[in-house]
Length: 231
Image (tube, rainbow, N blue to C red):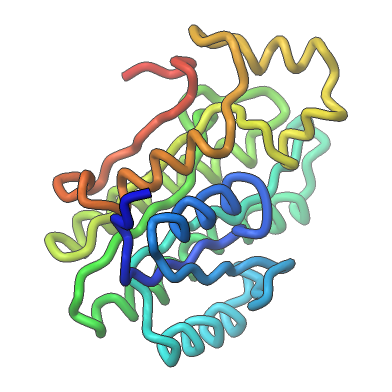
């Protein structure tokens, strides 16, 4: 490792497992001080709860602030639209979109006050572009994440860079590879590379956006998806 994030302070939501954990580990390996915000983390926080998010960032400020935020916390609800309830909508949007808004707002508030720049990386999904049957809430939430990213990039330029990552299907607990049928796995692998991605491949994209290679990137979406979506 080259220590490209030496001295930086990073916050990763949803960092207790899956993509978030891989990003937290990659950042730490490059020298960053990483704080994981997750219901299962040492600093537990419900990203959909405004008071908890505010209290979390008050602690972050006291411990040295934040230079890099990765908004990775997310949930998936798969249901046909006609069986989807308002409670389903509120629960998923609460984590996937409201959570990104709350965490992003408080992190950006702190970054502005610190006057040392910063990076925000929001985790979206290829499904924001593709859509998928039985996943309309998830697709809509990730489309909202992309829109927040573009708006924040303009609002906080030039000192704070805001970008997103839209992964394809990744081998994580959310996808549930162990319990997924061969038919579903075959469908998930229908991309030019013919396979499901690995969490460390998404972490590599986050490292690029957080590090010295990403200094001319803002309002962009990096899409490690095996070629399932091409721009």
